Amino acid sequence: MNKVENNKAWFLVLPVFLLVAFSAIIPLMTVVNYSVQDIFDQNTRYFVGTEWFRQMLFDTRLHEALLRQFMYSFSVLLIEVPLGIGVALLMPTKGKGASLALILIAIPLLIPWNVVGTIWQIFGRADIGLFGWAINNIGIDYNYAGDPVDAWLTVLLMDVWHWTPLIALLCYSGLRAIPEVYYQAARIDRASRWAVFRYIQLPKLTNVLIIGVLLRFMDSFMIYTEPFVLTGGGPGNSTTFLSQSLTKMAVGQFDLGPAAAFSIIYFLIVLLVCWLFYTTIMHISRDDR
Image (tube, rainbow, N blue to C red; front, side, top):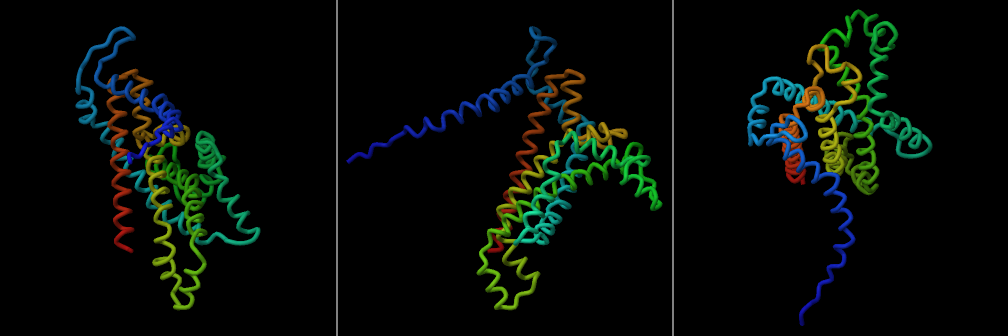
């Protein structure tokens, strides 16, 4: 007897496919089309093949921006992931204190990106900013507007303040999902606090850490608004990341062909690194089981 399949369920996901096609696929194909043409105006364009890709791959300015971007993104992950786990472990789990802690920890996430940049722009000033004034009064010559190292560290600190709560909340939800019987068994075996974290809590946090690492890498790798508001990419090019270089190329210089080629390379780099992160974390998780 032949079994008849009902394919009507595909009509339920058709709106999603249409939405994705409108919001992602069509713009992506437009960028691909621009990346192989030299565009002078709306009616004048010439096919150049892979010329823009070759030019972008050998552009030393973009190599420098890419290096700064990787340094920044990996610094963000190295600081925010352990710090977020530590904050989640310290947060109360019961009573009114738990609700208050969740509210307080989530406040930075509610602030828009441009407002975050403005807050730290004022906060870091030596004349009127509390942070800049305090740093200079303990004997450290701090000036994010004039020193490249200070600017880079200020952007990094701003990101840690803004986004560590996301990692903390994800880890907190993962910790709350661990059954109490695991902790009871650990107490019976007289396991140390480190052993409980290493063999009970950390393995159970694998899934939320994958989400947190991927979200934070993608977001930090595409950061634009905060450093643009805070430093404008300076001093010099010390805080000019890939997104700012791309914006200058596409909007400031109106080089649509090279900008389109660079945006595709940018997109592929993000996909590749995210895949590497995901594969590595999953391998580590399987080895620990």
